[in-house]
Amino acid sequence: MTVFITGATAGFGLATAKRFHQDGAKVIGTGRRAERLEKLAKELGANFLPLPFDVGNRKQVEQAIAKIPADFAAVDVLVNNAGGAIGLDPAQQADLDDWDAMIDSNIKGLVYCTRLLLPGMIERGRGHVVNLGSVAGEFPYPGGNVYGGAKAFVHQFSNNLRADLLGTPVRVTNVEPGMVGGSEFSEVRFKGDKKRAATVYEGADPLTSEDIADVIHWIVTRPARVNINHIQLMPVCQAYGPLAVKRKA
Figure (cartoon, one colour):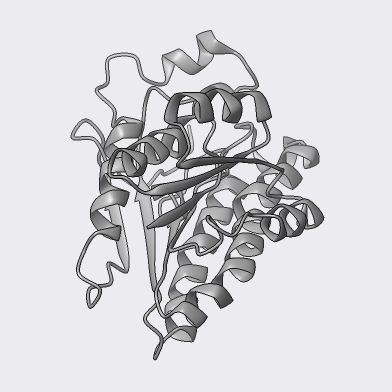
């Protein structure tokens, strides 16, 4: 099995790369931080291919995928993990650069990699596209604006992929985690403010990146006749809240 994982330099992507490599799979790990990928390659050995590029840059994606060596080229599983949230400002105050960056990674990167790797899966008669969505794609919250919208896109794009791929053996799954600690998610959102990021998880027992990797591994290793369309998971300490109502004083 060959697994192509975007955003493999940290968090879900890193944990997923290690989980599949542990099973003997060949893993292609991508990301912008080449030094982290090289470090991971030294740790994992010959069955890991570091492939540094920016998923939001179409030209870079095309060039990187085109130069995958023959012994890694038959990708069986695509894990579209790269993405994340930047900022928590209300829409009327948000930074358009932050919105562009979220659209580039969460949407453009996902569709570029999917479009370029799908034909090979269909030709070989096997394949699985695993998209990382979020509970934010279903449940809105103040400041979620473009991040939530991007993850809603991931949800619906996954559904439409399933419709397009009917009659082929290629599977598609959308994974929607809730609160996950121990990753760089909140540090990225708050632009390196580690103290503010840490307050998100104070007193909570969030999911871990390894939990997400375990779920992805389970999904991919179901019998070929089984497609897990959609899976949503939260830590026990997280649940739904009432709808907000602004009342007059």
